[in-house]
Image (cartoon, rainbow, N blue to C red; front, side, top):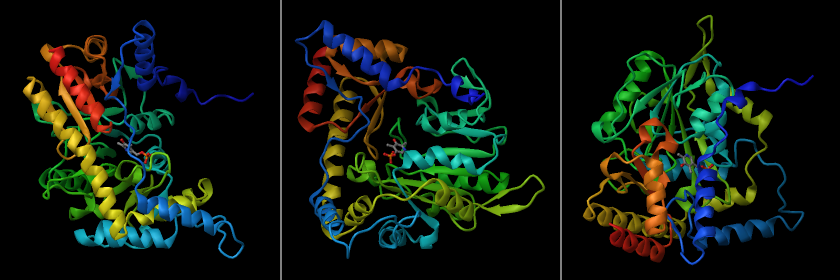
Length: 408
Ligand SMILES: *Cc1c(COP(=O)(O)O)cnc(C)c1O
């Protein structure tokens, strides 16, 4: 008899974006003449930039002849890309990495979900709340999160981020073994200052805590004082694994490529107190379960670091950030309490008069024909908030703002 992993059954059936799609569809069916604009999507809309397209074409052509054909590549990625990453993403910030500390992946979702395999099932975890659902759900699947009660998992420490604490999470009162941080943040669009990030690194050093740091939106940072990588903080190499993605940086949501950094100094402890380095363990894990990101995707990623690639990617990010600025300004003028949108493609707004997230979602859909993402879908502290994304087309974004003006 094959016994099922019952931890999977603890996951609530409802998937946030499926629930939204259902509601939007119901509206479309009952209001066939009203056009809906979605500011709810977490996917990019701009095409890949010319430098990337050119590199992909070239890589495809290489696949066409025996001499230049590529089969299985190294599980941890090609050196041409690892070196481009070191030279462009880290050296300019004074961070020195060894190529063997970089693991090219097929996007950050896989690795942020899989990384928890490196630690025992009975570690305690802490997350900022609201949060990208992958962190918690991947821990639920392995039995580490406990049971769901009143919207919270029993073995998860939630660190609320809300208007009251200006989205600065407090260090947990009870020590935790593993902490997930994501900055710039999805869903709130807020960032962490160098001083605040130092507190987390120092906490981790003092408490033997492991930090999983998701930097998927690092390319959207505009303020020169905001850290792009946790390794900008002294001591972070001893405590943190960092995740990067080309999805939001360069429109790779359909291409699939990113990377994970596991520093050589990073250790976890065995039950009998021995320190074990995680870098060789992650390498072993990847060699066993992953056969590398496609050569074409890795050549595409490499092209982002060429002078043309850098310029073109910057233009796309500016396009989205112009949307974010327009949205911020409009919503503030309309009297909303608005967060994020300055160093991230997300706007997080407080619903008026403490209206529940889903009620706000329904009203905005039925009265303004604009779709948002209900904040409560990202965790209990998201109740009373909604997320709007800047990933739409500019004209649609402008039209959506006009509708909100007329709505209120
Ligand atoms: C989009 C996103 C990712 C990246 O996902 P990919 O698998 O690289 O497409 C990672 N973390 C967060 C918080 C995200 O929003």
